[in-house]
Length: 302
Ligand SMILES: [Zn+2]
Image 1: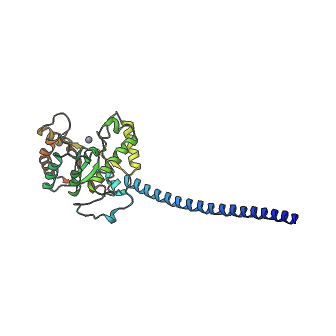
Image 2: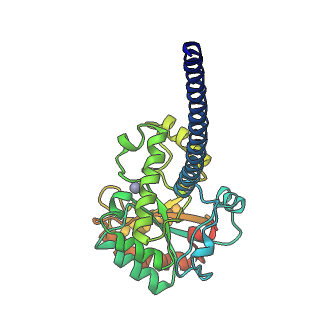
Image 3: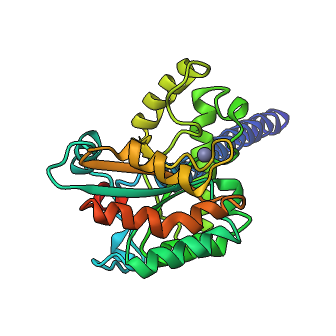
C-alpha cells in the first residue's frame, strides 16, 4: 500500500507537473496569440498613422494628392480655385519673363491690412483685374476675412512667409520652409480650405542681396524639393522705399517696366501704403495704355 501510495503520489506529482506544463504551454500560446493581435493592431495603427502623417505632410507641402473632387472649382476663377503644380506650371514659371504678348502680373506683398486691402480689391474689381497677393502669415491671422475676400474675388493667394524678420526667416533654409508652412496653415484657416497650397513663395526682401545668400540658395533647393516655386519681380513702384510720392511711384513704374513684354510688378499692401492704393488706378491705366493685359499666378501655376 505504502508503495502504491508512494507510486500514486509520484504519479499525481507527474500529472500535476504535466498539467503545470500543459497550463504553462497553453499560457504561452495564449500570450503568443495576444502578442500577435497586439502586433497586428499596432501595425495597422502605425500604417494609419503613416497615412495620416503622409497626408498631413502632403497637405502641408505637396499638393499631388488631388483634392479637387470634393472642392467646387470655377473655371472663370471667381471662387474656390485650388492651384495645382504640374510640369506645365514649372515651365511657365521658368519662362515667366518670356512672352510674345504684353502681360502684367500685379503683385501685392506684406498684406493683408484692414485699411489698404479693401481699397486695392475695390480698384481691381472696377478694372476686373485678377492680381496676386503675397500675404504675410502674421497679418493673415490678424485679418483672415481680408484673405478670404481676396480669395473669393478670384485673386491668387501666394506666400510671403510669416514674420518678415530677416534674421529669423534666414536663420536656416529649414526656417524659410517653416515660415512657408506656418503661413500656409494661416491661409488655410482664413479661407476655410484645408487643401489649399499656393506652391508659390516670395522671399522677404527678394532672393538677391549678399547677406543671406547661402541660406537663400539652400532654401531655393529645399523649397523646390517640396514643390514650392518662388518668384521675385522685374518691375516696381518703389512704394516701400524712402518717402515715395505720386510722381516717384509713376516714374519708377515707367522706368522699370520699360519695354519689357512680361512684367511682374511689385507693390505693397500693408497698413502704411495708402499711396499704393491711391495710385493703383494710375498704375493700371498706364499699363493698359501700354497694351498690357493682366494675369494672376493662377494663369502660371494651374
Ligand atoms: Zn515683403
